[in-house]
Length: 319
Image (tube, rainbow, N blue to C red; front, top):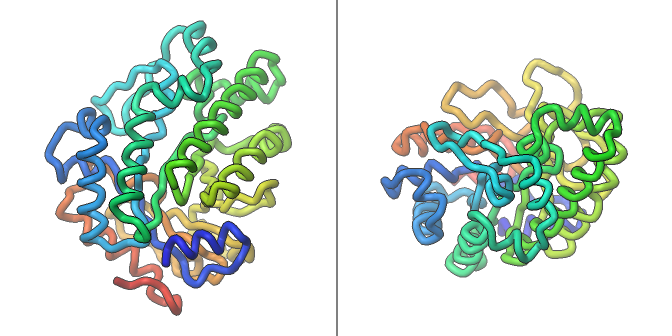
């Protein structure tokens, strides 16, 4: 059922009901009781733990791999696992400029990218005709900021030639990487992006069209999470926009299909049923993953609270 809903959404057809897919990944390391840096490199441990959690929670989908530092690490950055998510330490600029020109085949074999692809392949085989599988990648602006500093977007806004070249190379690199995730049967690919400044919008939108089209061609639903986005806007290639409900804003709920990102912590949820029960809401997620610092024995309570936002909608899953 979840996968048939995704196929309908890709075709532009109405969803029978909203999909419920909270993002759970690093927390699964607690189930295996192994250090997080070890867990994220072990496809067997990851697949087993995520499968066990899914069978307990019975959500519409599960996370195959969720780490927005994955690509930066593959391009030569070091990760400091003393924090979660890990701090990203970039190498020399010359190293980065060389690495972002790697071929798709070379990139797919670097860092933990082979691990991520293997996990999704294993889950696809183990859970055939089962839940939807989600993976996440950074958008080109987010990746550029990880690699070249937080001022990258400002430099690109001022049309600095080197920044433009880097943006184009990263967009192409992520396009090919997204295709690799599609080919292992990722059903939902979340692109987590910085908030795109208005002066860059047309350039960014044009650069992303090929990726949105490729994902849909391969049967993968593209979902775009723009930082701080609380409203939809028309985007060429029509990815599904993931919004954080503006709880204090009485503006109308969007009429076009959208996804909702609910708080991932155990803090009491504000009333967001106006958003989650709207007919145009087709996917309910969490705003990022449920934190690694959470207690595994509290996970059921957290999921129940998130799922309760859907109970007023006819046809919604309340398992």
